[in-house]
Length: 107
Image 1 (cartoon, one colour):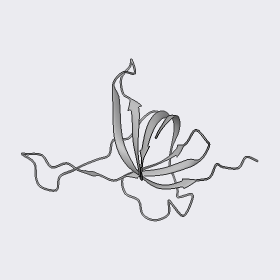
Image 2 (cartoon, rainbow, N blue to C red):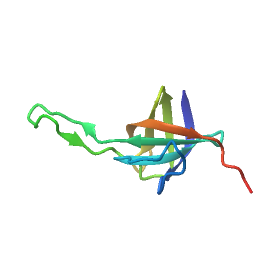
Image 3 (cartoon, rainbow, N blue to C red):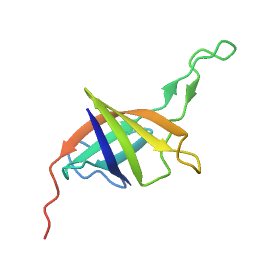
Image 4 (cartoon, rainbow, N blue to C red):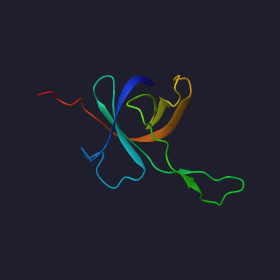
């Protein structure tokens, strides 16, 4: 199930029980088209290379843009964002969904 034009906001502090605890890597809150919030996290990835050491890890790729696409599959969210001037070259990373929050109530 894909979602278009998500808003991406870095999580500065845990906002719910789903986000409490110690999180490593990159954690973001995604605003879904229906207004709900998905909290996602990506830990460093195993990156063993033929000539590299066993246990080598790489950092998670993180979007530097505010508007992204995401493909949700089970408890994963694949974030996809443009990385070129023309917008044709894309970068992606798979994040684990930590929780889904209800749409924030407006005052």
